[in-house]
Length: 256
Image 1 (cartoon, rainbow, N blue to C red):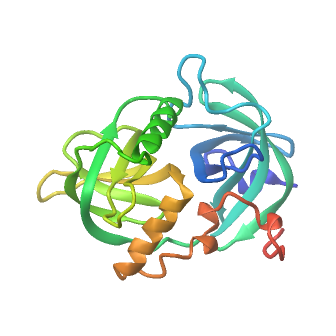
Image 2: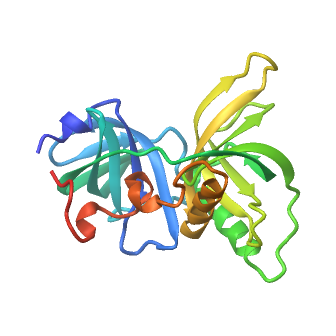
C-alpha cells in the first residue's frame, strides 16, 4: 500500500482516538503534520506540546483514525501508536485498508452567547486535565458560577470562531452557555487560523474542537439547526467528527 501517496511529507493530518479503552462519551483528537511515510510507519509531528513533565495523554498501543484530504477527497486510516521518538513526534503503524469519504463542512451559525476562553501556553495534557476538572464541576448539582460574558461567536459542532484583543495561543479552553437549560459546553480547542480585521485591528481566530463531550457536539449541532444554519444535526454524516472507521459500521461503503 503506497501510504506516502496520500500521507505525504508536509501533509496536515488529524488523529481521532478510536482505542477500545477510550471514554466513548468524549470526542478526542489532535492535529499534526506528516514527517515521513512508508508502508510500515507514518511519522508525524504536532504543532503544540503534547505532554508536560512525565505526563502525556498518549501511550504506545493506542489506536487512532488518521485522516487527511488528498486529491480532493477525505482519506482515513486506522493506525496504532508504536513510539514517541522525540518531543511532539509520533510514530504510527498503519493497520488495515484506507477508506475514502466525502468531506463535509459542518453548518455554522452566528450567535451571541455567554462565553469564556482561557488562553495559556500549556501542553495538551495540561489542558485535558483542566477540561476534565471543569466538566466534572459543571455537571455537579450546584455547579460553580463562571464569569461568562455575552460575546459574538460563530459556532458549529466542530469548532468556534471568536475575536481577540491579544495574541492567541496554540491551544485554548472555551466555555459557552447555550442557554438551553443544560450545563455550559466546555471544550479544548486548537487554533486553526487567525487574521487581523482591517477596520478595527481585532484578531479574528478560528478554532477546532479537540476535546468535547459528544452530547455537547449534538447540542451545538441542534443550536445551529435552530438558528437556520443548515442541517446541523447530521454529525453522523461527517467522518471528521466520528471516532470510528467505515469498516466498523454496517455496509463498508467507501473502502479502498
